[in-house]
Length: 337
Image (cartoon, rainbow, N blue to C red; front, top):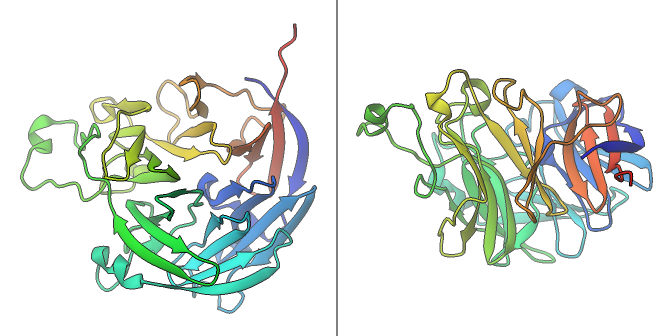
């Protein structure tokens, strides 16, 4: 699949780029949203691109830099097409496409999150976009309370017109996944080893099933030390893990460090597969897993965009970021007959 640029945009100069592909989403109206670093990472802002106009709004305007660094705000696509932002575990703001805040809702039920609290700290909001609904609830991926970069909690948020409530929280245990933390059978079977919950890269609700990207079982940072496996699978409402749609495993028995981050695109057509390291067959280059066909596709990026990353897809448009201010919109080139 060869992509060609159809539009190019520049984020505001104080933006340091999307936090990650997972912080981006596209509404049903085709508006591109992303939570971005601001002022060199000291603050967070929400950016939108609609009708070729780039807008931004600071999300922590009431605080001093770093005061709200504990949570990284997470965008959530609401049922009426509006955009919500979970600023922290107790606050939801609703924005229009013009980025004017419509209203703010207090999120209650935070004691649900205490189940996995450590040293008095609850799991953290971590800029993962929430799309779709699972059993009529929004699914929010949360990070560990203390460590950074190990999102292993799925929290369920029920949102009404004027209220929002955390209803439950869970992890994904090792059952149904090719957990091989050490690449050594004796070490893996040691009674001193336990898997508290696999690392969740993305989770999207589809009625009575949940599509998840699982990025390994390591207790340490995947982006620093690598993972033992990657899987795309579905989970039913009773917690059953189905057969994986796509999977790689055995990495701890191979030389070098390996890892993949996964994101389900807003279109629901693809999963973005982004290698964490340059090692391996893909040499650090992205792939697309086609959820309709089961094919793994290597996209050829537009001219001048070889170092950019695809961060989302909606209808015919792929959105790319250079990790800073540059954003491209591209489409697949029609094959020549």
